[in-house]
Amino acid sequence: MKRRAFMTLLGAAAGWPLAARAQQGAMPVIGFLHAGAPSPPVAAFHRTLAEVGYVESRNVTIEYRYAEGQYERLPELAADLVRRKVTVIVASPNTNAAREAKAATSVIPIVFMVSDDPVKLGLVASLSRPGGNATGVNYFISELAAKRLSLLRELLPAAVRVGALVNPNAATTEGFTKDVTAAASALSIQVEIVQARDSREIEAAFATLARSKVDALMVAPDTLFATSGRRQIVTLATRHGIPAIYTVREYVENGGLMSYGPSVPEAYRQLAIYASRILKGEKPADLPVVQSVTFDFVINLATARALGIEVPPMLLARADEVIE
Image 1 (cartoon, one colour):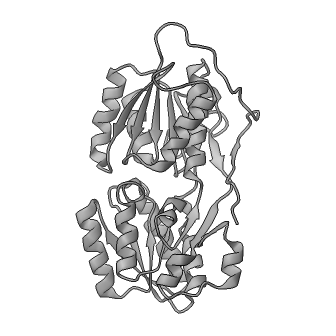
Image 2 (cartoon, one colour; image 1 turned 135 degrees about the horizontal axis):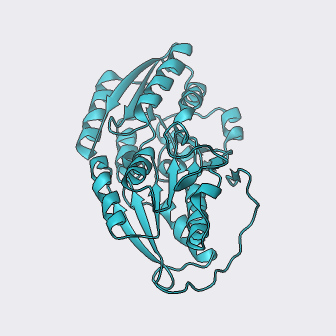
Image 3 (cartoon, helix red, strand yellow; image 1 turned 60 degrees about the horizontal axis):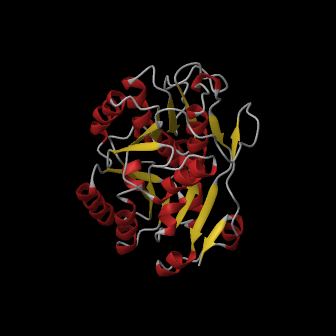
């Protein structure tokens, strides 16, 4: 029961050549600025680069800068890439990375991945005509709090108290908290917000949730949570017997219960396509922002059984993938 997630490219023609001519002169350099830690979805970036003719160490160099969830490091990491005069900066997978890349340079092309509106963030003038030195992917992940909460209620009709794990350092947290609070009120659900900035605080947050006897948990969009913290969060949710819904499928592949959100590998694929087009001479100002239009709903049936939860047949039927 798997359907591939697709992205729509505003105003752009479909299909790109599968091979690129060898670069003249010095080898181009991609500055890869990542707010979290290395994670499986990033493989889609390298795979797509190769498909369009750029193979690392053969005809392109990649300078990696990982903040490991310590967002305060991003300004210096971005500044370092600027000092190295990279050809293009790929800033992912959140607003924090994109903002710092944009603040570091108005000259070097930037390809970003953000969940917030890039126009409101000041990254581009418009989605169809970015107009500056930045363009990229707008994948809707933060705006889905109400949908995830409704899926939890459908799975657990008796749930009246739901925890929400957030990172106060994430740029999306304020919007997420506002959305989930409003959605919970409409469903007559109480929400307990718990914060965590690192692995120690994640452990403490789950201890708090266990004491509060929450019926379920929502994990907010956050790069720290989704990369280096992913396995820890899934393990703690299982250990404390807390049914949880997550933002991306990678949690569920690691044993999480449910996820609803865009395809992160597909977003990285689009980043690679745009990075390659810029390396070939196109301008970010002329490349429309890509927006996600299809979302994955994934259920881990084995985890549901371990938690003693019977998933309603209608919910299973709507899932894009069920992991047995």
